Length: 151
Length: 363
Ligand code: FES
Image 1 (cartoon, rainbow over the protein chains, first blue to last red):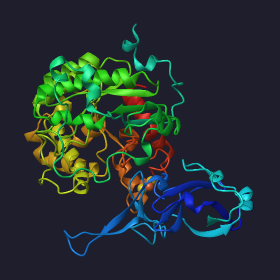
Image 2 (cartoon, chains in turn red, yellow):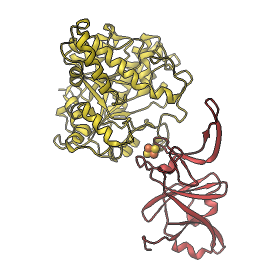
Image 3 (cartoon, chains in turn purple, yellow):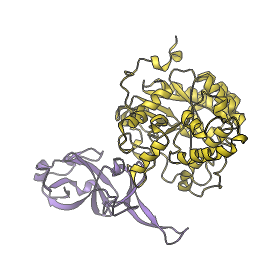
């Protein structure tokens, strides 16, 4: 596989990342987290731009906005990840930080789902390093919806 | 000579000429206060052990790093093996100086007898459960500064342990740390040849004072104020002549920041020229006294928009003599040994990453 070109990587069956869950995988030596937010998949690099913490290990939460001092409005619930070290907030759907969205970002990758037969299983080069079910869990021979990431 | 009396610099550890990284602020944690019970006298074993809490502004994001939960369970900081893996091995540290910052709250407990008993129990717990687990682990004598007589006794009781390198106490207090009531602590520390470190966390808890302007309203506001308290404490110790009374005393300001120090030094020097006669024991510029007696740790390092400005501040405080690296592992606001500091001039880098700690702690 040529690491220079943008390539599709089949990660796992969709059933392995249900809504509200995540999976951290290594693709071409890069640690990447894939998150399911209400049925939509998003992926970001697992290395915080601040001090390189494993960002994808952080808490998925929402964030607050305000119209005037003393007023809080909670929003983007389930869409914000906080770095496990210094708690910088990033929007999982864009990779942009909350405090400085235009200049501080985490690399965000496109994720799709595709129907794929089990033959693709052998061409999958993703090593998982997160304690989630292994690829072997799905039925051989049945067409599966797979999570696919473009890198 | 029993091992506990052997000086640290004679320990069979790493080659002493090849140090590269000493971490001066690493945190252990008790999973539960009851872990101290076996080390307490009978009466205290029957109490519900607790420390004074903060009113209304606990950290909403917790204090511990979420990726530092030990594999075997428990809270971050409770596992030797997790600390070895995530810190000591990962960054090839030569030494790490450990303390449990939540225990510092004993100094602002209303009951100073209880505080002293807890300090003693904790030191025995720590010696048994941490100090001997890894040659890179060094420790502190925890004291309760609200009970200076007992604190001095505790420093003399356990301060001679070969792996204990300093006294540690809360930077929060009911009255400023330069006052004479605290002097037995400084006297004992000098007798045992140990620096005295202060560490934040108990500000506004228990019987501690609020910050100078009053109580903050959130953890954010509280945390931003911590360096202000360091200014007050250092100012008190200088003005009351602590370092004139104890010329061998070294003060380590852990986790209090650095950027405030140039301002304080220059303001003190300026005022001293006119008002020296009110503190005639100050026989030289306050800044000279500070640079000789005070050491600061890096975390949480200031992160100015232009990182060159931090280098300028490090120059202003003579960081090549006064600043020591600290990670604060495993707390949320810790700094990574590799990515936490900006690129530094080589000599200053070596001094900060290990040289100043090596000299101060005689490693
Ligand atoms: S490393 Fe992620 S916020 Fe600091």
